[in-house]
Image: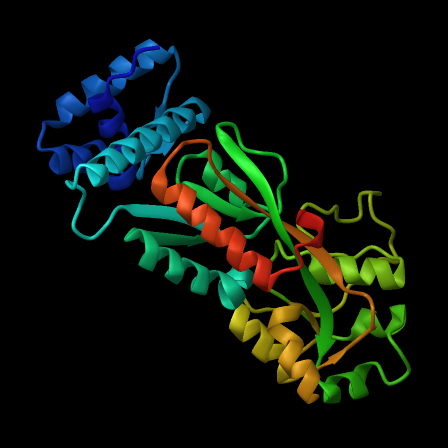
Length: 317
């Protein structure tokens, strides 16, 4: 399949700008020329590539073409850097990362990568179970994800295991778990969730209480797929990792926090663990385009090195 470089660049510009008109202004060509290039690509591919919405959206086939367009951009940027003709501010590398890693160890790793590679980074925050969709769509070049299976056109490597602990403020434990962490107590004790995709607290309840939790995304609502006695605790939603931890410390509710984020509070007594030895393990994988690129290669090395310090890497060997 022959897709001219200028057509791929046009396709990427349409997504970046959100419209054919915006791409035309960026590329200094007419909107008609942009449309002609897209039609030519769709004829060559044999499929519709874009939904003409506002902003435009890629189809499944369009996502594959966009990923190819981004990879061609990356190769050309690498060549420009090698020839000393790259952009003065460094090339832009978009990556997707989960909020907890951002709040604990990932930003120092990214700062080191910026120093050593001269690249600029755009961080897209996404739940670790959903981040591969950003990679699949071509929106980002690399992802820190809980998904082991590599996205088509990418590689996947286990870089470590994060451990989450169920914690709460001592006053909260005294008020809600004075007689122990029982199913009855978990049913009425407020819990804190990051957002409606956050499953850690529900999994803890299912492990400790042996019962299902109502309110999970995708769960039924009384259609026979969940028992009527399912636990339905009151919930707060705090969609920021630092503020989530603060809410737990202030006694709003109990929640699951990465060990690195709660270790100091546990040591000082500002938080206590609800059930000792009940940590949940979250394997983290670094997925990236399967493309030889000096910047991506060095970024991946740095992420692995920093993860070896921040995470348990015994399972990553």
